Length: 199
Image 1 (cartoon, one colour):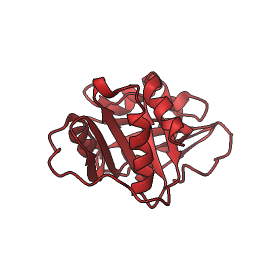
Image 2 (cartoon, one colour; image 1 turned 90 degrees about the horizontal axis):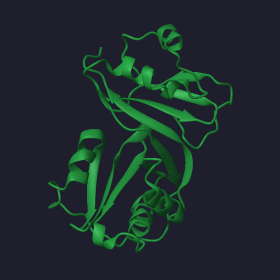
Image 3 (tube, rainbow, N blue to C red; image 1 turned 45 degrees about the horizontal axis):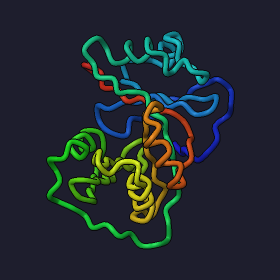
Image 4 (cartoon, rainbow, N blue to C red; image 1 turned 30 degrees about the vertical axis):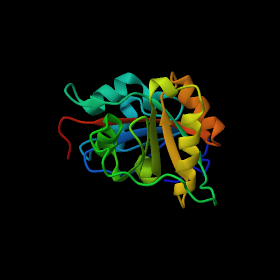
């Protein structure tokens, strides 16, 4: 799945394979959706459930049905993407920050996780959404509003040799501004889920 390609604005949807065992997702781009789901759900059943490319794929009732009563459903995030930068990165990898909450969460959702920064500003890179290199960051409250988040997301582009994605809650205006200021462009939305049982 290529997030940089523009799918047809047809209201349709395409089934895709999950990129991490046991972790599934609904991704919506303009007028088209991409859905990974357990094999127990047929394409016909997903369509009957209401999956479509005009918002139906992110209907809360769809996610609740797919995840099951005891499943986990993540928040809806916007996806932003940027090309790598040719200039060298400045941050060094940190192996002593594995207990940081942002790092622990990244390891639950991504593979090949690398950690940069310090205990006040952490940047995490890992193989995440649709197999892309995904960046996540956290800035200490005392340092917020000073451009630290923007600089971390710029650093993610410097450390990469491929496009980088970042997932931001639509309500997180500060992080959205940081991503836009660092040259990331919105391409769609994603919601992750883990069913109680999947096949």
